[in-house]
Amino acid sequence: MEPNDNDLRDLLKEWDAPPFPSSIEKRLFSSRRSWWRSSLPLPIPLACCLALLLAFLTWRSVQPAPQQPAQVLIRTERVEVPIIRERVVTKIVYKRRPIPSPKPQLTFNELKPVGELRIKIVRHQNAQN
Image 1: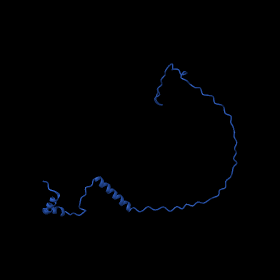
Image 2: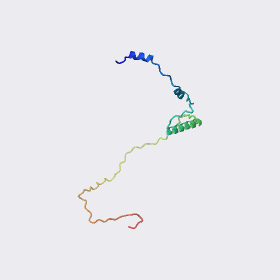
Image 3: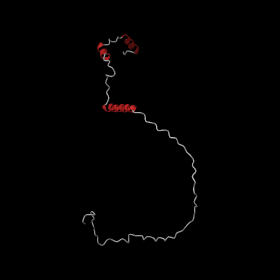
Image 4: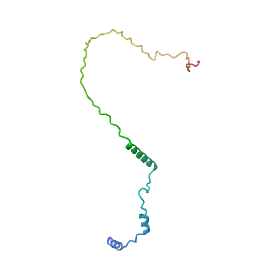
């Protein structure tokens, strides 16, 4: 027969827990170190980055604030400038040009193979060919 929930609750109320060992209490509560003596596992590259960031922020806080440039005042004035008007002449002039002659068109029928092939190798300007 399996015990039901009521039986288990009654057994739990009757059970006394064993006393807490003093050796565990000493190990847990006697080693109260100050926070500046505790260690924190931190990767070296992250620690270097944090140190550089702290150094940069310290340097920036020590630097004097940049001087604000003087406020620029923009003022516009209207200035009258005399304009000399020139006469505009519109006249169409035609110039006679010669009519270009049509360029001769080459076809593949006019191309012929070379009778004798002469090869000339040019190396350098100063070299003897």
